[in-house]
Amino acid sequence: MLSRFVSGSVRNLEREYSCTVRLLDDSEYTCTIQRDAKGQYLFDLICHHLNLLEKDYFGIRYVDPDKQRHWLELTRSIAKQMKSQPPFTMCLRVKFYPPDPAALKEEITRYLVFLQIKRDLYHGRLLCKTSDAALLAAHILQAEIGNYDPGKHPEGYSSKFQFFPKHSEKLERRIADIHKTELIGQTPETSERNFLQKAQMLETYGVDPHPCKDVSGNPAFLAFTPFGFVVLQGNKRVHFLKWNEVTKLKFEGKTFHVYVNHKEITLTYFAPTPEACKHLWKCGVENQAFYKLEKSSQVRTVSSSNLFFKGSRFRYSGRVAKEVMEQSAKIKREPPEIHRAGLVPSRSCPSITHGPRLTSVPRTRRRAVHISIMEGLESLRDSAHSTPVRSVSHGEAFIPRSRSQAADAGDRTAVISDEAYSPSDSVLPTPVAEHGAELPVSLRQINGAPCSIEEEKESEAGTPTRGDGGDFGQEGATGALGEVEQVNKFVLSVLRLLLVTVGLLFVLLLLLIILTESDLDVAFLRDIRRTPEFEQFHYEYFCPLRRWFACKLRWVGGLLVSK
Image: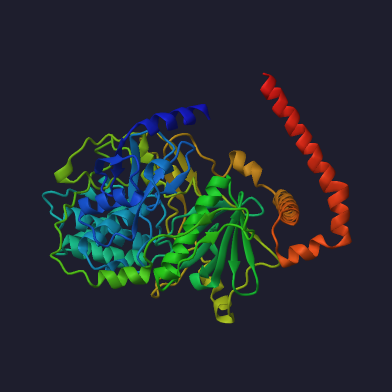
């Protein structure tokens, strides 16, 4: 606490701060910002540096000293959001995944989304059948090293690159075969577009998983996608709610609630810390506003509690998806130049510290390959600092919305991943702590293509985080503990309500007494003064009390004068 106070005091003395933002291609953008600069200023600087107009899909992410991840709020001062000492280090990432990334207006935007999804593929956030995985990896090869050339690409060349948490020789051969035979002649832009079209059909496209635990202590994950709210558990998708079916998101302490607009069902989860739960809630509020609303004017300030005197209040600031697409259609300019970077063989560069560093630093901005401990910021996508939670359905288990959907439930829960990609088996040569967690797999039919999800593992800045075991496993192991927590929180809420009610009544009583004893000549006050009850109160209580206060004041005044 003292260190934070001191660091805050030192920071307040500075007029300018140095800020470094790591971009999606692993290059770094460093600038100096004023002490009172808002997040929008820094975000606009980066977008101008990248020549990016379709910028609403992106955001700046940072980690605080408590290892909690945050999205930088554009309307607030940067210095007030950062709890660490300058220089500040952040990362540019895709915050809202485009529903159809291949349909983005500009190539520069598609390229940046391509880089983000390539990271997701490596870290196990975007997984699929082996056949689909081979095609995606082949598109990456074609986009970044070009056509197959026997003189440049010897036998086994695809094994030198790390596309997934772990490879098999069969998968590597299949990647090379597709690259050699099926993708010849494709330009980088075409390969990237085809990659995005394929990735968009996968189950885990746009998933930013928040690790959780259910009522029995089993691992599960929450995710907010362009299509809705998802709960993933084991190898199944146990809940999928479209955005128009989610009526409200709420949190209180470590408890996170999702209210559904049919059957009056509430899904409840528990986060490891209140800060993690608040981050989960804010992510949900922003995603729901972005994908669900028709206009930004419809955005309302959201409260985390039903009671006006407690809880957090938050408002999404920005345009919604429909407005972004309409604005993109109006862009008319010459396509900006894109400085693509070639793939770096992962096995030939042991000093690379971050898994998805499939791209080197752009030729225009060469930097040292060795990355500091803050490299862990960019890869986790909130897995450890989001919200481990356990799911509880009040009343009954979640029921599919229609009989047709119930009939399809078996297909949705099928295990369709041929390869169990396990990020925990991938040892990243970094000095940072690593977090491994089993990511659930489920099936969703998008454009007729089934896909899957397995596990997530990402490097992280700072100390090890709580995974499936440890303190968090003990904290949320039983449903009884969750019920006790809920009862305690309900009792506290009732007590707060009573205290506030009594306080308001006391204040109103004092105000009424002051008004009635004043010289105000108002009709209803005259009527009160004429009642026998008021006269009794006035002569028996108010007048003696007033004389007592006047006596005490004179006594205190006499003491002060004598001194």
